[in-house]
Image (cartoon, rainbow over all chains, first blue to last red; front, side):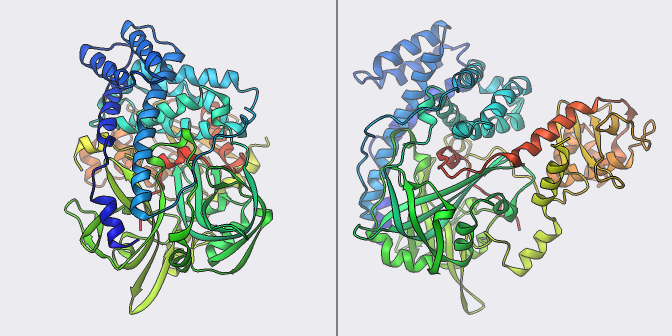
Length: 471
Length: 165
């Protein structure tokens, strides 16, 4: 992206986003105090929240829900309405932000087409979803500030049961991540600053996923594709017990325009498997890992593609081909690649992760001790706190870089750039560092030595599991 | 960063990632149910593990095999080698301060650099091994679940972080 793109992105206020943000903050304060005892101030915030939906299809359900909350008789359908209203506001903020981003970048995006028929909802989940809703209800009636070890531990059984069902993995990893945070923070009353937006987000997404088994299910593919996947970079997500590597790339299929796609592999883990060891958890994706580590193109045959631009990865239907430098891919193909539509439920500012290439910037330290890139007078913060420990990127390397492949993110009212790869001149030699470089093991001698000292956590636990789980 | 910005941050960080440590000797340690507890591999028998725990002050010490055979090394107030190893590894994984606060140790002594085990004023208080051991098995079960290839959009709330080098 050029200086003009960055100026267009960061230079303008986006109408409506701050208003939506304030309404959500009002609801979030009520969630922190608990819906079990709503005082006048919180009742007013809830009424303002519901009032924003007057005349929309959510208007009546939300007015009723807020009335029930204030009267102290809240049911699952009322909580679903609150979560739905919150998601709708943040969804609208997401749409405005993404529209602004696409305009600033000159990016073409496919329009969302509702699926022809509903995907089959996985059966047999009713009891688990009811159990989930029951815990989510208890949480929100108590309020974040009243959460303690007892209420957190009541989620244990339902989370274990959800984890055992592959079709419920989205909900399971979300609840497990939320429960782990609440456990660490318990008793929350002693916490100086409660992460209101974050826990409000996690609670409302979980409430929606638990509302309808079909909403959490993987949708039916819209196509199967054969062609070349040129990798741009890997975004890594991780909490104590789950990890996901999400590859962003450009898909070339004969006879069509190049398009932006993602391929994701996920695994559950223990909190003690951290750093480069997490790559060992993706044992089912050797081809993908090899292509990342060697920076090669992936030749795909009949791989299912979702409307969201997500490939359902089939490692056996992929082959690592010729070498392909992600920076070359970005320079040649990124500007013209068509971006995918975003499914309605995924529309939240946290989902904004738009691949971009920045060059010719000046790296500067910010007043707050962070890092920013200045490109012809326009400035964007660099999310150095999002550099994963499973790859070679460090804050120093990013600060010394001359080109950066990254994802544009939005959070807490500001854009930031999350680096996925950088090019830098180190000791007068150009070097490239990519998040996926260590997918097959640590390649940097100094780092390899440091990690070898920690031993092979993955193998040790697998050995222990193999020996003890059978008895 | 001021607190009001953090309160409106979707990716505000609550849990610090644990520090990497060697798992061979103490594959599992947790602070739960009012105890620092975990599993220590036997030095002599590959199929045997010890379940060790220290309650928050006043420190009740417990150590037995997973079949509830008491550890011969644990007598009265002195931690056995398994408990000593457990505390040392918890120190590595969670950091000294977090462990010391959890066990309610004398923070003045801790800040002077006294090893945590020397600050545990214990007494023998046998705890059933079963709950800790099942917690360990539950922990290991995460490694047995199938991998996924469908996107998990909710994990965007959990960015990987902590390039600690």
